[in-house]
Image (cartoon, rainbow, N blue to C red; front, side, top):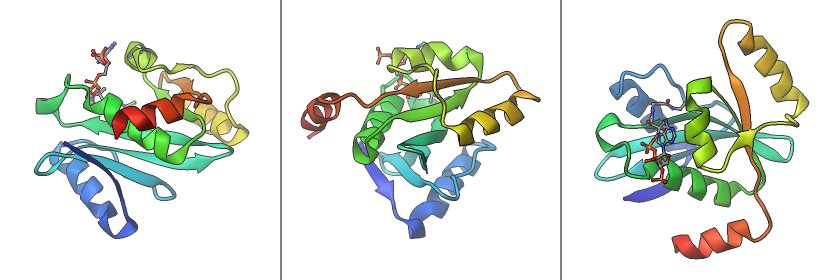
Length: 146
Ligand SMILES: CC(C)(COP(=O)(O)OP(=O)(O)OC[C@H]1O[C@@H](n2cnc3c(N)ncnc32)[C@H](O)[C@@H]1OP(=O)(O)O)[C@@H](O)C(=O)NCCC(=O)NCCS
């Protein structure tokens, strides 16, 4: 399994992956994009820079390879690469999953995300979560991933 950041030229590959999985997800326009590949893309996500961190969207793992730790590895790699905190919005059903990966309910969302969350919450049940990049956590992980 390989974990890579996509360059702008390759971004359409991520959207092609979402489409092949029959997902309505899209890569984030202002973001950076990561994928996991076996022979082809099996997982992807976008990170959009906001304040001193990034907003995570579009985390999707192909159904046949779920439960193998791919989401965890992809997220860890991407967060090490960008540094700083990650925020996300998810359905309350996924709170357990993200909690398991070290995310906590967000207490201080950047204003931009706070406004966006309020708009989205008008039509969907969503919770905001964050995973802080702690000093030392990145370095330990970086070494573990080499
Ligand atoms: C949610 C999703 C990304 C998980 O991907 P995955 O590769 O199967 O997840 P992982 O195997 O990395 O799981 C990581 C850990 O979370 C645990 N976990 C998985 N689903 C869980 C759940 N619903 N509740 C609690 N823990 C969960 C796993 O057991 C694993 O624990 P471990 O590391 O101690 O073994 C995948 O199921 C998916 O693509 N779902 C559809 C799209 C989606 O809902 N995306 C999120 C949008 S907010």
